Amino acid sequence: MTHVIAAELVANVATVLVRQGDAVRPDDTLVILESMKMEIPVLAEVSGVVAELAVVEGEVIREGDIIAVIATGAS
Amino acid sequence: MTLTAEPPIDADLDTRDARDPELRLEKLFDVGSLKALREKDDSGAFAARGTINGAPVTAFCTDATTMGGAMGADGCRHIVDAIDAAVREHVPVIGVWHSGGARLAEGVLALHEVGLVFQAMIRASGRVPQLSVVLGPAAGGAAYGPALTDLVIMSATGRVFVTGPDVVRSVTGETVDMESLGGADTHGRRSGVVHIVTGTDDEAFVAARAATDLFARQGSFDLSLIGPERDLQTLLPESVKRAYDVHPLVTGILDDDSFLELHAKWAPNIVTGLGRLTGRTVGVIANNPLRLGGCLDSPSAEKAARFVRMCDAFGIPLVVLVDVPGYLPGVGQEWDGIVRRGAKLLHAFGEAVVPRVTLVTRKTYGGAYIAMNSRALGANRVFAWPGAEVAVMGASAAVGILHRKKLAAAQPGEREALHAQLAEEHERLAGGVARAMELGVVDELIEPKHTRSSIVHALAAVPAARGAHGNIPL
Image (cartoon, rainbow over all chains, first blue to last red; front, side):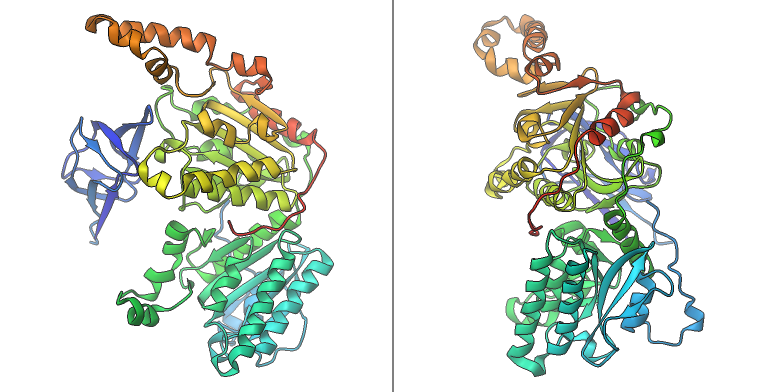
């Protein structure tokens, strides 16, 4: 199973805190976005492994753009 | 609020069908309190009086053991009787739904009677709390029953849709299963039809009991229950730019384990829910910076507006926690009707007569400042934490506009320093909270540790009141 994490709003990718293959748990911060003059952490909503990281620092992303895909490992 | 307790029924000793409407209402009510309004029949609905934590209520349940709970004329009359009795007796009414809609065999008569159920609900709207518990499919006419009520609870097996997957496929060609079309996740996260999603039916009854208790036994403020100071400042990040989850702040202000969140997954950039403050039921509305930076957008404005109107209709005081950067900008938002839908929140607060207090924790900017229960819209008391900013926009953004030419003329190497200096001056003159206090739109700066006490005292000082209006599902 995979869990897709997408951007909720237009933002600048300020910091990327995980790498592909990292294990994450709910509420771990994956990346920090900058938007509306704020730093908004994007959290892993599920436990799993970062299967895909679709953003790089400095990139501008739009609402709905995929940030990361978490493989939740049904095992 | 923890919603895990099992309702007081010993399932092992009961051989009845789990869908039996009498059994379902027994699970909802206090043990031994059920009294049928009429004997159980094959009408497709069963109605009864009972109590929840001692408070009298009425309830009805569609009978899924007869024709899939389809609603005929007689069953609809039972439901109307239950709603009318609740209005007469000033008690909440709870509907338990598992029904395919109007009975096909009864034709237009069934449609008319389902319409009379809706009319009874609309008559009762804003007069007595109406709650719905959806445990199975609630289709067609049965979908709009819950939708017209104040609060909808759905278990994992609940489904609400106007037309089922077969009709959808034949008309639009879309292939979808019942759960994706109208299940708990769909309505709890996407559509906003459902306020509380639970795993099991039993948990849905526990949630319905908890919510009914908050409406029916509202209690009163008891200043002796304020308790020791709570250091709420530590719940916010040190950096004022960093977003955070507002939930710990909400629960930190309320009585322990008393918060019942509504619409938790839908429009999560604003948090709404009922809880208790020194024993009294209150409604809480809080911007959640973790989601969308806490911006107001169309869904969150509608979610909050409906919640404000519900609390106002039932005399539930409001606590409004503000940390908002503004309305969410964007073409999509404008085309989606942020102007029309955002206006609902202005109207809801402006119309409300219940005691209502605002606390600005970090910032409140622009149109969102007005919308979040500002003094202009009638807040009884507006507090701010030290360092809070009340402004049209952040100082840095403001000087970028006000001093555009001056900044453009500056040497590239000096531009940043000039920008920072101008922002500092602007903040001193127009921003911060000092000017807002001078104008009387913020009443008082309070230390975070005194928040709970200040809010309780402020709400308790305002005479109780209740709005005289229905609760249209905005």
